Length: 480
Image 1 (tube, one colour):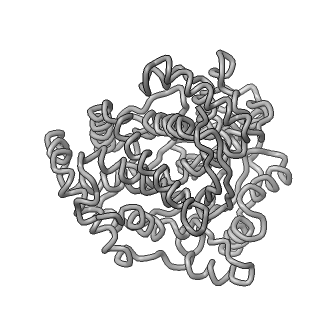
Image 2 (cartoon, one colour; image 1 turned 90 degrees about the vertical axis):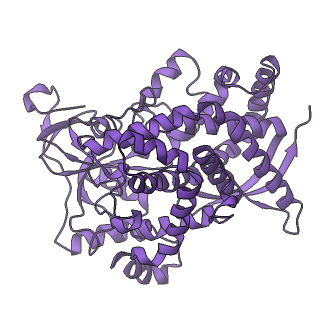
Image 3 (tube, one colour; image 1 turned 180 degrees about the horizontal axis):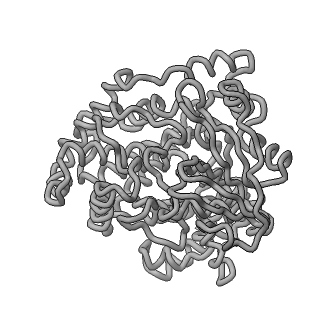
């Protein structure tokens, strides 16, 4: 909740607690707490406890010397977080990655649509292009992704039959998602272009150079400060990954000529459209999905065999009754839908949101109101917003049935993974993910295809730089 008038709130108006510390030393101390001494969740939880507030002042990485101003106002509950979704109140110009912005040399000299604010004319034009493109490909979503998943499951089974008797889920599903996205957008296979079979690794290399200041490799403690110095003192230059990006760009430019023709008809320069599409495919889509699918399989795996039986029963029953897998069939699978939403609630693939106040604001939490000045950086930590115990019962638990039924569906407005509420739709005038509905569909379809093939599975996982690293240990073929 937010307003521009402090008299409009009925809650007590309080100063925002917290501290930025001394210049340089304060940001460095917070950075080391965040990455090495406390870890992400504890970093925020300790400050909530210390200041008895879910709206606090703190510094966010990367800090010196990459970020000129690491100071933020952190929103750590499900009520105050909502201001970040109100584009009339906040400006999202160049804040996609937080308190710093990677060089536009990573994207051919253009500011990609994701870095643009809704008030910039090119934002609406590019977003319209994305939405039109996805709408035109709508009929291809299910058959194309099913074909890619068939390749993925064959790969997992081949790995399990090999010497190691285990399968790397992340690399397998990463290839499947990249191939699907490239085929969907261009109508061609990436192997027929300069990209070959290297698409996922090219994207990973390109992303890592941009996002390195926001990550930690989890090295032994003795190397913490060496790592910190190496990746958070000077940004990785774009030329270091120029060859990787060039392959992605040229592959898309050659395979996506008809898509780029449509962009030109809308008034977008061909070169700019291609760089934006590579960014959407690589950063927004592939970068998100390589986290989302491991997160999905992790939580479904932790649900155990009882959840697997329930999902398999629902999926197989509906597919039989509907004579196949279709949008209508997917929509009838209430448990499957709920499980996907619950995964997105409990562990959003992109946990951060940033924006700057367009004007002086009053932001409300559950129990107080706070003044934010025009131009101040606002940061939202989504896992704390979507695990707010004052909104969700058993907020820290994975509850598969949470979103089933009318009462469960009312909670969907608090599922925020897409840079918007799950009950809202992406438009040219907002910052919600243009592929929001496609991502949800892909996650549902993944579970459908999985449980049509298998009864259950066993796995291991460990946290890595982004999301969990999942290893499949066994797959039990469907018994029907």
